[in-house]
Length: 209
Figure (cartoon, rainbow, N blue to C red):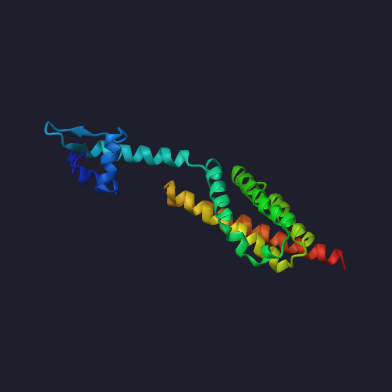
């Protein structure tokens, strides 16, 4: 096999690991370098395809930053919450409308905290996690939720956020290494929040005794 070897559409698809219809679409849109025979058949040079794949993967890794995808993730979370999943939660059913509004808005602090965490490579993680944990704990106390319900409320938003990140990353074909790094950091950060929430709840409870 040489760099100058000619490939058919099926051969190019096999080399790239995609469906032939995808190669055809990329070719027609001018995305993928293609040559046409006199008979109108598509032909591809192995060297050109490999170079295109390498440069595309590199630019994709450089372009895909978690910060830049947060808006899409937030939209996805809002959609999931609006579909009525909150109404099924036992802790949510115990709240009045004012409290429910507060909890729906609380998802925002989690997104913002995560964005700060990602943007600073975790340098502000401890302070940010403590602040968010305190917010969830104090809100739970204010609305007379138990520490178990307080944890359930946080985990609901955490899990919804994680599910949305996975969905958006998968659709964007984020490289596995980058995605794994993000998931690991997200879980470490949100675990710190949960610990802060429980510690703060206990302190607030003891302060009122």
